[in-house]
Image (tube, rainbow, N blue to C red; front, top):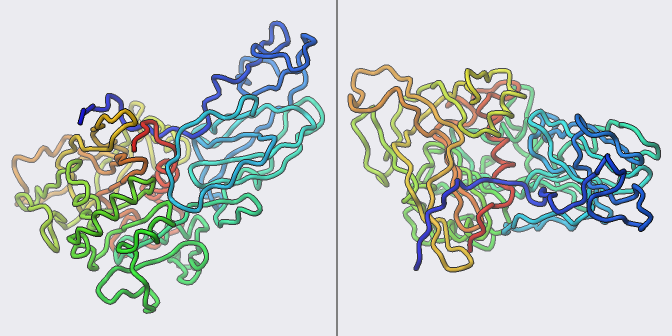
Length: 464
């Protein structure tokens, strides 16, 4: 088998957002540069909405739509979302995990992507009825929309550009199908609830019961019960059931996840799930979910206690006590978004800088791992993408003297496998072991929301 090292990182790009093949407006001769729809040489070419509103004049028939793409519950603006105006309603998104290739939109479909602060500008033909679509990953809202009948600039109502928090494809709303393996210490459900995926109570804790009909909760501990004490069917030994979820969350938990991960059938099921387009999110103590099925990508270390033995149960490389750390994002798009929407982020260069809380594990190194074969039979290998990195900020007498304390180390990483993705983070997403009940979102919780959406978009490298 031939082997290729991917020269570029596994970049996440929006499906159907490349409009290079569409006609563009030529203000000099008042016609489109691609085709004249009626043959009269005039300016009635189907316009694709790609002109720069800061430098190019409004087309003589154009309606310029402006607005903001909001996340569920209008909790935050969404960066890099597709905004498009289809003549025909787009097909429904699959209810199952699937491979999503990056494809061009049909020619003539006005489209753009939202800026880091969620704002967008889209030019359409006045008086035409479109299916206005806003989408990031499997979060999508589609609504019938008739453009204003006069040339000019118009603000689109926010309810049309706010991504939904419940699924109802009959009316055009879609969110990912989510499975959450209940975590004792990283209450990801609180983050979902604040975005309206379920609900939180007055104490900012998740309101159990509000998840019903919205996302599914599993507890793979020995007694196989959910947070209500009711029995649940297991998930990881049921590949058919796993296939019904676009993303599966494995938050930090002191349940039986370690023993379950020694099961080779479960390892195979996880690899098959991701290879076929599924995404998994794993936080700190559940690291075995990412490490055992995909052992090439990460090396864990424990500089507080002189190292660790990987795959050791139950504690392995989970060092403790936790530490808070100066952190930053080396990803340009994530940094731009944080600097636009997060008041706790700052910068001295171009990277967003912030603090992450409750780091429990240490990624000692990242390495080339096998991602899959391309369609010509070549093996593709690459290192994980680093979304967040930070320095150790722990004062202890028994630390490893050889550990490089001043260097930035990976905290949040992801890698492609087949046409799905694995994401791992060393810190508690919700910030503190007790759940840290609080209003609003910490920076690292906002990053989770960003990555939930970003990991769902199409893969730049198509693998089988």
